[in-house]
Amino acid sequence: MEKLNLLILVIMPGVWSADWGVTFKSQCALRGTSVVMSCKYDYPVGHVVTSVKWSKAQRVSGLWKLFYLSSLPSPPGHFKYVGNYWSDCSLEINNVQHADEGQYFFSFSTTLNRWTSKTYAHLFVRELTTVVQPSTVTEGDNVSLTCASGCSTPLDVVWFRDGEPVTNPVFQARREDAGRYYCAIPGQETVRSASVALNVQYAPKKVTLSMSPSGDVVKGSLVTLTCSSDANPPVTQSGYRLYKDRQFISSGLNHTISDVQPGHNGLYHCQAWNNIGDFVNSTEVHLDVQYGPVNISVSMNPPHIVGGSSVNLICNSTANPAADNYTWYKRTASSSSMVQVGSGQVMSIPSVEASHTGLYLCQARNLLGVDNSTEVLLAMKEDEHGSSSLPLIAGVAVSLLVTLVLALLLFWRKQTTHKEKKQTVFDLSERGSSSSATEDQSNSIYANFHMFPSTPLPVTSITPHSQRSSSGEHDDLMSYEDEVTYSTVTIKPRNPRHPRHIDNSSAPQDLWSEAGESDDSVIYVTLAKSS
Image 1 (tube, rainbow, N blue to C red):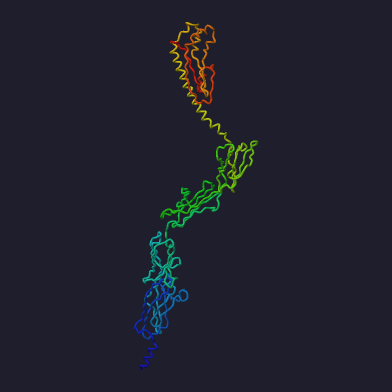
Image 2 (cartoon, rainbow, N blue to C red):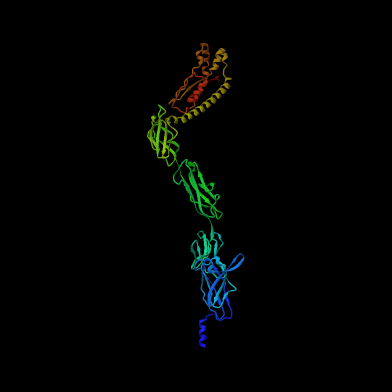
């Protein structure tokens, strides 16, 4: 009998319990992961489990209903029973999705009965969540990365930025750290959080100024200058400034010159600013405007030309590129046509002659154009020997003027002295007619003017003009001849090399003038009554 009981125990496995029961454990799973819903069940002795099933409660028309997992639409292997037929009723769910969240029930059948659990296991489905703190920073600020799941179990995660691994979740932000960050489960990198952007703001860098067209710029063409930069936030229109030779021109991203002129030549640069830091300068760009020759002029060296000397005619012009061809022309005297007379920037005439005088012009040329100078007169200056004597003549004239003034002063003084002495002179009316006396008085002064020769001349006796009168008058005057007193005043001439004799018959004013000019000697004769 004992052997039979032992055989029964072996054939009828089960839980030695007096009641039916199922024990669950709720789970929290990350979307995309696999989870095992732990489960244990009991039943009375003598029962043999013949089938097991999991069901999920779903709400239909406001009522909860149980649906076997086998009847739910799901990919193969999504739900997998991993328990046994006597005590373990665990369920594995692969690639958990949000639709899997809910309440799960377990039921089983035995040879004698069937049982459905009165309670359920709850599956919570959560997502990995990345937190970037702060999400917008200025270059140099600290950044911290945090990964959250919503499940109570601690997480071991790895970090990625734009698909590249990140070793340190706490760092000091650089501009290259900007991007999208997410966390993932190690070994299950497909189980990852949604990506979160890190915005790193920084001042403008790599500020550049470009010119279009970039090659040679010809006068009159159109040029556009464009400023660009690497900045976060990007530089706005008002954040750009353009300068020429460090002088402000305009603000804005672009600057267009529709008619380029030589005055636009210079060094250009732009500044960029985006409210972070200071203005940042670009490198300088040289705008080189090319044009044909302008402002052509001719200069002479020396400026004043004397016959027989040399002269250089120099052609000056402004051009870009510089003029590389110069031609000289001279206007002919017979017509208004021009004749080519030379080439090169400098035309030399080694010995100027009368045939070289005339109007000259030069023509300058480069690859972009040609233009002429104004005509310049080449004329010889007169010999300077004559002009050098002008100062000497002026000096002589001043000397003569001074001498004339002195002579006039002396004459006035003598006249005054003569009037004073005239009161003591004998009365000529007692010895001759009134006419003779009057004539004597008028001729009481005799003057001879002589220029000193190399050897002094003797004083010549002067015959009174009255001797050529009637004999009576002659006798009267001769009787007083012994009363004539001669006096001589000598003014030495400044230039004894040019003696000049003055005629005695000249008028007084002429005599004084001549005396002033020639500096001759003057002889005064005074008739005085003898004591």
